[in-house]
Amino acid sequence: MAYSEKVLDHYDNPRNVGSLDKNSTEVGTGIVGAPECGDVMKLQIKVEGDTIVDAKFKTFGCGSAIASSSLATEWIKGKKVDEAMAISNTEIVEELSLPPVKIHCSVLAEDAIKAAVADFKQKQDGEESA
Amino acid sequence: MNFPIYFDYQATTPVDQRVLDTMLPYFTSAYGNAASRSHAFGWKAEEAVDTAREQIASILGASSKEVVFTSGSTEAINLAMKGVGEMYGSKGKHIVTCLAEHKAVLDTAKHMEKEGFEVTYLEPDSNGAVTAQQVAEAIREDTILVTIMWANNEVGTVNPIREIGAICRERGVLFFTDGTQSVGKIPVDVEADNIDLLCFSGHKLYGPKGVGALYVRRRKPRVRLVAQMDGGGHERGMRSGTLNVPGIVGLGAACAVAEKDLEKDMAHSIAMRERFEEKIFGALDHVAINGNENSRLPGCSNLSFAYVEGESLIMGFKDLAVSSGSACTSASLEPSHVLQAMGVGDELAHSSIRFGFGRLTTAEEIDFAAEQVITAVKKLRELSPLYEMVQEGIDLSTIAWTGH
Ligand SMILES: Cc1ncc(COP(=O)(O)O)c(C=O)c1O
Ligand code: FES
Image (cartoon, rainbow over all chains, first blue to last red; front, side, top):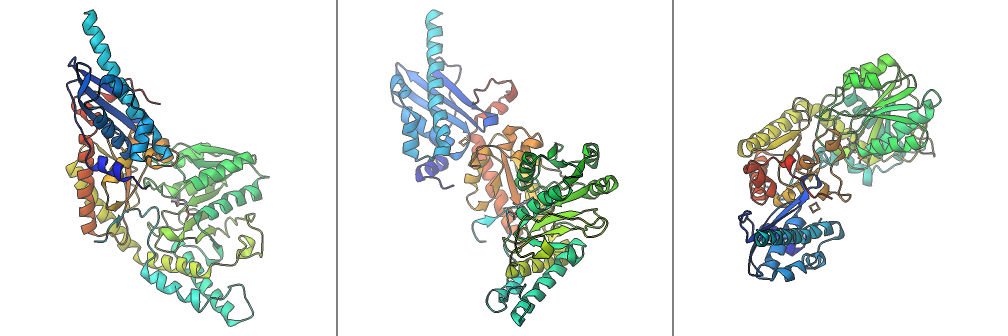
């Protein structure tokens, strides 16, 4: 299969690879997918106020999955939490020119953002009620 | 070195120059129809086909009258299985095969199930092999055919064909083996190995694509088949259609070269594989060999690189032509049925890459490839959340994944 230039670029130079301290109350962690399915994404955000000031990812999956998560971190950095929640997988598909069989890789990236935000919010709620 | 470097010898092989040189005249000057009895063009073509038949019989330890030309293994498999089914179906409707077979066998078996045959699919062991014992236990009163591949195309595991053949002989059941990966790669002898039917394809042994053969035993027992192609009655009625003379000449020449060079080719492929695996295992942890390490095709190395996904790995080996058992590389998004049948977890199936070595592989290419593989695996493990968890001492099986 031929990959788009952008997928290759993210594969060769993935943005924001790494990990944030998952125990910090400012950090939300989303882990989606399963090893048996061939794809696991971990996406983390660091939030100050309502702004995502940092984002990191690690992905086990095909090149399109790696590119989708790399792009997702790039897009959400600097965005408000609510803006990040509005990112949909179709935007990722378009930006990376993903073929139909690779759409689920972009869905995973969208899910990872949502999971990271949910984790962050849960931590905040926990703080408040504590 | 020429890039990309070819490491997919189980998918197909280049045509050997010696083979091509033998074929060429049969396209442009000696282009007769081997069935034309009335002129020299036909006689010359027939003579060339006879020579090829002898060469093929020789590598198989068969007689030339037992060779039926086909368009390749797929057609030969269809002819063998359906042909036996139709001929002997009144004696019994049971067939024994294995889950690790090539799709050509599995889909033919599926087709026959629809026509009223009952098929037992043996489960291979974790190395991909079936035992003679398993076959013996599966044979029933109404079994008419056992179909077990000689060497597996994905993991290279070589089955105990001689023992399986002996069981079939003893129980009076016909034995067909898919020799696509074994003919020209390891010693094959239809007499000593107790084989009744065997197929192979030219393009897997440095011959042309689109030509192959089916060996059909003529004595003790005499195997009869119902033709699957109606027409002019070529190949003693078993396969009608004008013979592909240049292809057949190429198939014969490829067998002659392979028979002559068998030991040399085997030693070379084994040396290449050992060199490769030594480098990989020397530099990386969490790598597993898929297939039977003690009984493997010389040129096949199927490895699982845990915690990295196969398709992303292949993207990393930009200069290597390899294939993967990962679902992500297949149109169906299903991981390899062979690895699944072996009980390799889906997780490791996603991480598997098949490296195939052959006649033209050089030590220089191996060194280059090993380097590229090691670099890509290390890079992708840096990117892998699973590798990170394992480094942190987390047992991945304890995590509640949100798989689809
Ligand atoms: C074990 C095995 N059987 C059958 C086949 C089918 O061969 P062909 O495509 O030449 O008909 C192949 C090749 O892919 C194979 O490896
Ligand atoms: S992760 Fe399997 S296709 Fe993308």
